[in-house]
Length: 329
Image (cartoon, rainbow, N blue to C red; front, side, top):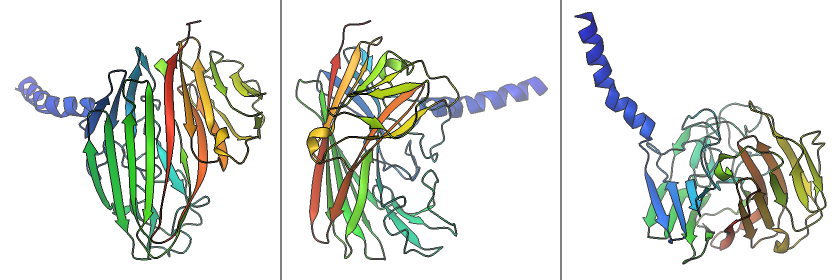
């Protein structure tokens, strides 16, 4: 009788376990015959990512070209509300080291995270960049999917006078190994929107470890602001690795200086010789800041741009990714 009961319990939970493993999250797939990309869709109740650090659109968990995989899971533990349990070329909006409306909000009131919603401010000494805040109002999401493109629109009206309509389009160029991320931010409120925006670019090329086979190429003479020790070196227009990064959190982290005042310096290449794959990505705005972070499982140039939109106005910007192959080492 005891074993029959245990068997009943096991059989009852198999569907639940299977669905959790399958990842029952809203998603979509787009393709142009050359590239194929799979994206998780924003959803405040069922979305793959429900954290409050990154905005919720354009979460690409797979992008394949010529048998190579460019994005995927890089983190050891998944929780939908963990700040960095997310994949692909994901983006964040910041106001200094905080967020729009955070400084003036009192504890218990709300502030704005573009692409996330209105978040409650607790009684705390400073904004927690890697924290997860309670979402009081997730705003409104609409998503339109085509064969080779997907359009996200997020709108929010905040009681302090902030309001916006944020559009992101992820599209694949016809019959070319190129992806474009287009942004448009419209200020529908009474207060200006002033923010930094950056793309974290969680690349995981073919799941290869970060090490001497990987190189990052800049269009300018680059300088690291931190000592990278025996792990990596920034010299000339390249960042190279001196050895493989070890598991359990060994990282390379630094700001990169040397870029100029035009969008010509928003132009980066990542190449992995062992995988035989590379990617070039360019932006149409000048860099305001450039951070570089990597661990064994992912390699991330993080370009920042300045965004300011006055009430009744809108602004737009875009990033283009070109994927290519290399002779294998």
